[in-house]
Structures are given as structure tokens and as C-alpha cells.
Image (cartoon, rainbow, N blue to C red; front, side, top):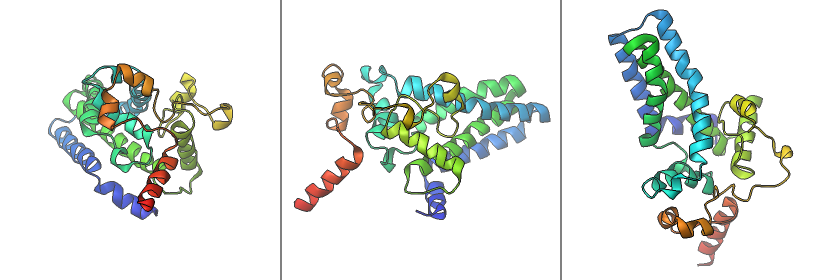
Length: 243
């Protein structure tokens, strides 16, 4: 995949169009009730700065939690927003975040802070920052999972760390584009730092034994897939060829 093909596919995705459309709406709200220049800049930068921390904490303590699948009405959400992504990291149908989970999170993380800084205009500026940061995160996430080989070393570094999170040990490297919080919170690692692969890297700890007590994710998934995603895909291809 070329960079041009990646960019075209990215901007055609409905979630990206939604984020950009809402960012435009936020810009119109700001024009209607603008904050002062310093307040506007401060609110926008607050949205930019808050985003990596909020994402890291949600990723580590919610998406990788052991509690969401234990609550029946939350189990479909956990399955959609992260379990499926770890079951098959290259499944494009779950590569982008679901709007019904991302938009409320962005709003809650940015609008109150922006409002405290600059009223309605500040809230709009901070919300726009959160939406644009989400677009940036999603673009880098595409690079990390699609068959695109980045030439820039800093992007190669991000892709390698994220692939380790998905294919070696899920208990670390929670950042997508920013591993500063991983360094600070002690969750940053390189493959050489951890001698053995995590047994739960593809199922996040949700296995057959757990499913006996909390069966809802298994029922929604039609079972629990085991083994490396590439080997599973190859086995399916072989089965189809044999048939």
C-alpha cells in the first residue's frame, strides 16, 4: 500500500468524516461565541495535551480491564472496542474506534476543561482539538496495522512498539503515537526487555475458563479463537481451498 492509497482510504472512512465535520461545527460555535486569543490558544492546547493521557489511562485501565466483560450489558462494548481488535489486529472492520464510544469520551475529556478556560468558545476550541487529535491517532493507527512501510524512523519506532503490544505482550506500550506516559508510568518496553510472549496477548485474558462464568463475549463471537491470527487466517484459507 502506498502513502497515497492510505490517505485516500483514510479520508473515506465514515468516522474520519464525522470527526472532521464535528470539528468544523466546533469552529462555527467558536466563531459564534469566541474566546479571547490567549484563552482560545490555551483551551486548544489543553485539548491537545489532555488527549494522550486520557487515551493511555482508558487503554490501560478500561480497554485492558478484567471487569467490562463481566457485566452483561457492557460486554458487547468491550468486545467491539478492543477484544476483537486484539483477536485479529489487522481486521479492518474494527480498526477504527466506534463513534458511540469515542465521541462521548472526547467530549467529556475536553469540553469541561475548555469551558473553564474560555467559556463556550474555549469549550469549542478544546473539543475541536480533541477531534483533530483523534484523527491524527487514527491515521497513525492505520499506519501501524495496514501493509504500509513508513520511511520515517520516528513512525517506524511507533509502529514497532504498537506491534509489540499486539503480538508480544499486551501489558505495555499503551500509547499509539506518544509513549511518554508509558515511560512515566512504567509500561514502556521493547521486545528484548521481556523474554517470553504473553499467553493472553490475543485474548486479553478472556479464555474458555473465564467464559464459563461470563459467556456473553463468547456467545457474541461464536466461540473463542486461539493461536496467532495469521496462522488462523492461513488455516481458514487452507480449509476453503480443500473444500
